[in-house]
Length: 329
Image (cartoon, rainbow, N blue to C red; front, side, top):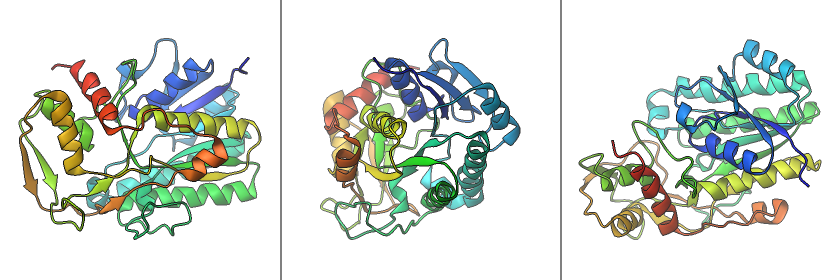
């Protein structure tokens, strides 16, 4: 019988956080959501789940929350995540991602909360010749988004050395798709993730889309990414939680499949599965986009026992299209 745990999920009304809330409920745990709803949605919050509206960086909010609840762990998803925006407005990212995370960690230390799961990103690696990338690669972020997350990792590492705190940092590659049961998915407006944008196009919610950069040194000239199904990503968080609850030491691990798909590969999958002719135009490269990001996730499998269930681009695309079809307007 699983011991019921109380877990704070920051950003729990957002795309990834809401899937974590569902997984915790499915496993018999008690999630509590902290979200300022700047990008979160009430529709993604399951009935009966406690929701606190506020910022993770507001110590008045977090101190009161930690005084009211005895949390077993924190799963921290709340962040700004759009690479081009981070280039245009870097201070927003250093404040929202790095400074607010530091405040949250400080509140955890003050309250005696000893387990922390951190949502990081492959963007910490920047441009690497290593294919695929494992955790020994030297982080060299090429945009403020990646830099803001790497700074947060450093703060978490140093805090754990000084205090009774253990953590798992999960470096996401490209997360996509939706809950197979149709309970949650992406509602981002405006959409910025490739599979989300292409799914909107296939469903008639936009007239056209662009490929940003077709002259990269890749087989078809477009960027290559490792797309991971949201349910497998959340599966990594659940094994991370088990690891920490068992007294496990800090871990930093990649979350991906080790399979690279280009922008054109994704568009071909969306067109094939939807039966649509996608109106796609070509545009110049965007600042801050890495050419190739594919994960070596061997450490996650070895150390935490992660077993992916949805390692298939077409399966990811189909779940995204199914979710998009639930919202015809």
